[in-house]
Image (cartoon, rainbow, N blue to C red):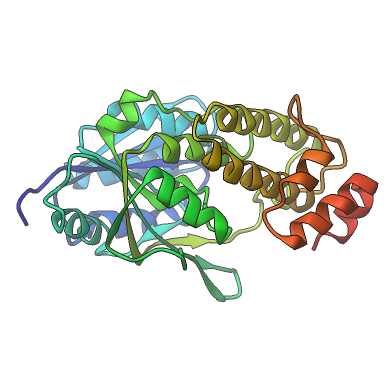
Length: 318
């Protein structure tokens, strides 16, 4: 290994006193030792603030930020401000990493002599349901260990409906994040979806590895099954508007056309999955736009149903 860069890990913490030990243990026991762990106590009302301080007292690689509750996005943003590493990861405090996760990323970068134009390294998420069933968010259209341009990565991923939104899926170059002033929008749902497309668009080079480094625990209380409908509607409008504006700013017409298909698919998923009965179209967009830019024939049929009756579409979505 030619270099040993410091890797920062940002962990928002809120009401996870039963799960946080599993997460922190997976970090302090990483086989790659040159890491810093930033635990962001987001005003947690349980025993988490005390636990965070106890972890920090035992390992000098851990620092703790105590702040008023502002939500996941706000906690992530605060954590990023404090990182010292050349690279960084996001980890949710009720999830955990494989013990060699960081080492796998560093080895992948080392294979390319830590190419300064690589802004992102993307891995695989292992999803674990409450009944123990396992599934994966992985790219079937990409070659592991290969570098892609932003356009190549986005195009190949969209064609397979595999442009995944979770921010925890990626290792980020810190200077790249700061250069484009990436930041999660506070106070909305779908915060990853709102940001990650911009991250992909701005990246010079993206390195993919098919290693399932991240363990995501599917749990009760997620926004897919909870939360006030009014907030879901407003969040959907905000995020879809932002995505549409970002796509329209893309100068490459072929790529913009592919991104329009991505937008149509995302619109259909958000409306159906979250049972939104109110129209959430951005300006200059309606159901005819969805019909004209389907990602698949199935999406074309969905758009027809949505245009006929959004209530009917939502009721038969699953």
